[in-house]
Length: 108
Ligand code: SF4
Ligand code: SF4
Image 1: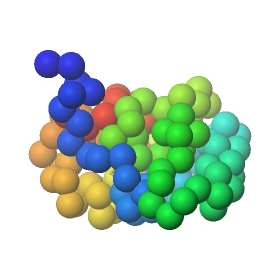
Image 2 (image 1 turned 90 degrees about the vertical axis):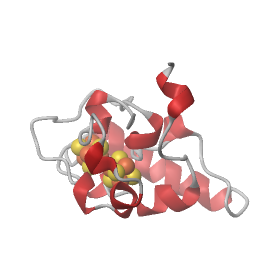
Image 3 (image 1 turned 180 degrees about the vertical axis):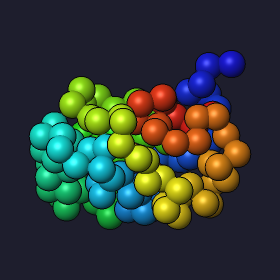
């Protein structure tokens, strides 16, 4: 089955807001991720309530949207997804991959 047809975590503003990726050490030194974070917050402020920004512009919720577009992440650092409400809510502990979705792709 195409992975995209079996997406476990919906791409919603509610889940975007719970995502911890913006505080993750893997992205901490990524200029690309910081730029996207700033721009996506600006964009989100202009959108109608509840409408999510373009996923290509959001540096997070990789468990839903798949691998990071930014190329300057440090995957040797620890993933903090296990501290995230989305991770708990959708049982991501029990899927493969269950961490570093920015590197490995979306949760199956
Ligand atoms: S589980 Fe990880 S990638 Fe998914 S929303 Fe939470 S912090 Fe972001
Ligand atoms: S998916 Fe995990 S490793 Fe990647 S940025 Fe989010 S919290 Fe960090």
